[in-house]
Amino acid sequence: MGIFSVFRTDAKIGIHTDKLVYYGGDLITGHILLQVMSPLDCKSVVLKVTGHEKTEWEEERVRYEGPPEHQREIWFKEQHEGKNEFFKNKVIVSDFNGTIAPGQYAFPFQYQLPQGIPGVFEYHEKYGRLGCKVEAAIRYKLKATLDVGGFFMKDLKAKIHAVVHERKDPSIKPAYGENTSTVRLLGCIPKGKATLKAWFNNVSYTMGEVAYVKADISNDSKRDIGSMNTVLMREIIIRGRGFNNRHTIKGEVLKNKYPGVKALEKSEQDLPLQLNVAQPTANGNLISCRYWLDIECDISFAPDIEVHMPVEIFAPQPEVSGVILEGWEGALPWQA
Image (cartoon, rainbow, N blue to C red; front, side, top):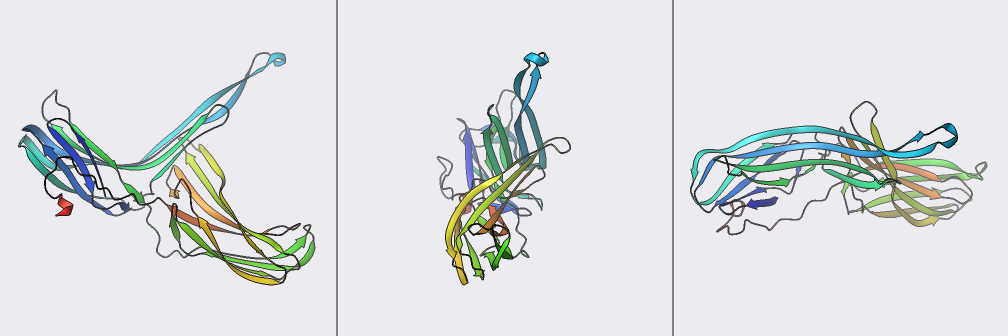
């Protein structure tokens, strides 16, 4: 649910959607709101709905100039970009071709989102000695236009960005990982086996939510597990024009440390993980973002025992908007 308004001295226009969040395949419903303060020549009220993904990034490059004995480095930025439209449609919500009398108008609209579209996504950063930028976005926009008559008259427009999430597969179960390994001191001397089993409490999470990982550890070795560690990893891949034209950002996002397990003992632990991440999971054609959790049994002077589990993280639901068009009298359509 959201509303955004634009006005001029003789009219105001706004858009309202009935829900805060939509999924691929959903029907978007809402109203275009119009306040007219004086008679206004108008052709139509139009809704434009677009969805696209866009990438733009720079990479550091170096070339050498001058004779071999006096060569100098010249650093420069190499530009890359890409754009992919999921849909772009125009809907005539109301056809006037005449004069609109002063008053308040609410025009209902609906639009069917395509199936299989990715969720919203935003990523911006600068890196390197040259301050190279990396920008990637998946956006969905609704734009209302009052097509005003008259050559010198400016159309009235308003727009909002819709929050769209990728639809979840109901058949998917929470991620599970298991690993039984021989604990080898200095990588070669066997000291017995240890087993790590771990699973998430949910299939997916929202940015900022606390995920709970259950860990079942059987330490049948003669070495203590000093600590249990979790590392949330993220990989973003953005693509541009041309074959194999891509840029990858990969690294640790969050790290946590929990109590270990003594030799020849067992332990069941809850490993809470606060998902304070800046980007949601994304599965576009040009933009992909995936997360996975590394869970480690940290054993001194021996290789760690690890499991790796994928996790999906979605964008949060926006706050309920209490904004209305200034000067609107009476109940709005969705309040009646």
